[in-house]
Length: 100
Image (cartoon, rainbow, N blue to C red; front, side, top):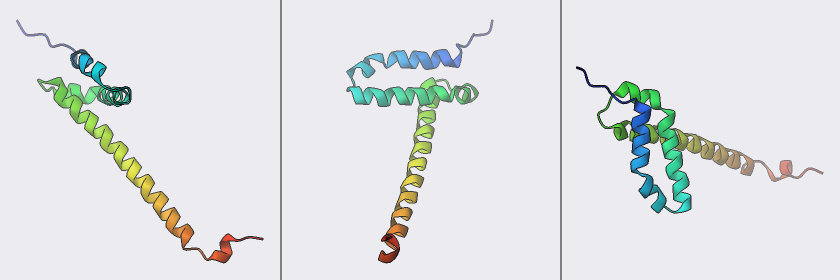
């Protein structure tokens, strides 16, 4: 008879459980980061199902990195926008900033 596979969401939960002692040993602020990474992994469950990796942590780690990369890109765009705004504000003539 064929072998039944556990649902991927259960495998993700198992990985989280395996890391429970690790999580408890983390500082409070690091625990928040750990939890955010686990949420990132769970947000991409369908991708993990399709990847069908024998080790669920492989696809979880990749999902975490994708989420972090998206956040990094968003922050980089925001920094560039703010730097451009600052440059354009500092390049305006002094008279235009003084009204009245």
